[in-house]
Length: 171
Image 1 (cartoon, rainbow, N blue to C red):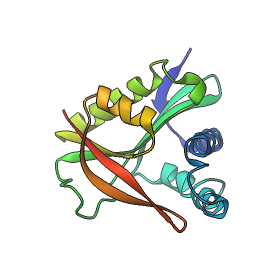
Image 2 (cartoon, rainbow, N blue to C red):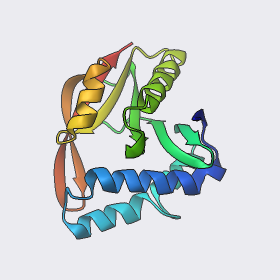
Image 3 (cartoon, helix red, strand yellow):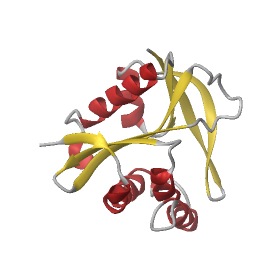
């Protein structure tokens, strides 16, 4: 049975382990090996940004857990867009990761509903996110849930720049 709850500092290790595994499974082939290794070292592990963000009140995390295992999470954060799209009325969903073994189980949709609820509670009228243009599964999921492409974002992994689609869903 999957439980949904806010993340706590005690979740750092299982959250980090799950997030790193999903990131590598999704993007690990997309850039030179040195760039991938540098990105993973910066964002995951004991000194990674994910663990620091878990402790930062500017970030909100919702977990999907099965026993002690994190099987999905959603992270909301202050926007990092710098004029690519209007952001004043929107909440930024930065990450929605689900263990590939749980794809199609409803975990992602439930986490997305949590993001909508948070946005409404903050009197936002939309949710923004980015998705890699080559991640067809994620793009289809977001389109199915009413997100539309509204702009582009340059996502850097080491020396490589990829095109991420900025997507928006009105609430």
